[in-house]
Image (cartoon, rainbow over the protein chains, first blue to last red):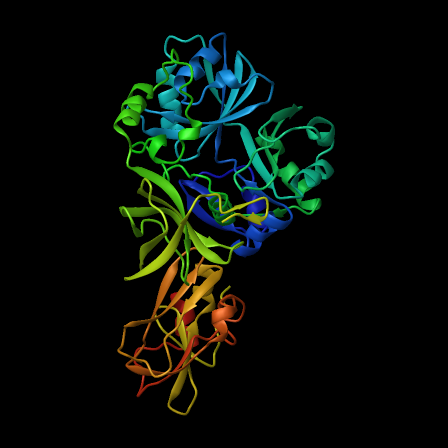
Length: 359
Length: 124
């Protein structure tokens, strides 16, 4: 039996094409993935991301604990609602999950983790929390709706009374609370917008209000091409437990500045850093026709690599990909696509942000 | 529900074949197939005069989601490929039985085709 979000019926009502997404019955699209993609780039769309999990951390040592648990440093969070992207590492420096943590105060944080990793994440977090004065509280009674696109904020203000007063001045990567709503100016599309966490019981009502304000439902298919254009990593594709952030172009998420902060995986990372890593993630743009797919072989000027996320960029009208290749690879590479070699240009992601093509 | 036309025949691999009555056939993919594949972004077609043996992959339709080979239903010679698909691959989605046809070919006969009713039963 697949799991369903509180918006399951709303997806059926909107003709969602439901698929098994890591054990969750989720909408892949509601007719056309391309239209939904373009809708978000040019106007506004909404995604049900209730399959992702919210975990609250409360207690006198919440801050001390998170400074050990994750590789970015929550000490840099000083204002209420401020968000931080981080990886959570194992002892070997591999990535257990990537996540966002929101600051409320030194004894109260909220974390959003991936759906597919929820079970192992919570087991890991609980094991690490031994000996800390912190309460780890998964909030499985919350739903999450991402409203994304250049007109997202305006539509949310229109659809949900009171949000403009609370969120009108909200800067990117910050969140605010309104009653039971937790509204973050974050996303996974490369466009402006909000991710709204709310009680499951009010998800359907809120979704309907957004629909009535003209926000179109968009499926996980569009979510994936949008995040790929935005050059954002997907857990399980660009990184996993055998890949460190150093090899996944996520070094910027590691905070090694406080020498005394002994976070999990730090020792392994520092050894890796000294030895030097030979892989990184780059962007690829196909020169000819066709679509790049996950796991296709790549030959760069420095050797062999592999496509980690390949698809078609609706905004560029070309196939694009993220690929794990030898560090320093540049120029043109060859991709083995359906029994033939095709040329692609190596670029630095993102490909598209805020509606503009950047490569 | 999938749209299935009575005026043509079908393969197990979800292609339709229309007998033009002059020794040539027109071929495309069915409504069921296009719906499964989703938004088409690229169609790779053979050239006029290409000869292909039964079950060889001779076209590739690529959607955002997946690439899918289209296999020759018989030994055949391509007489025309639908060049409109170069600029508008989405015709395969919006008009799979008309403007979104893939190839016209000559063949001495095709075995193992299904009529519309039989094909529709395979989709249940």
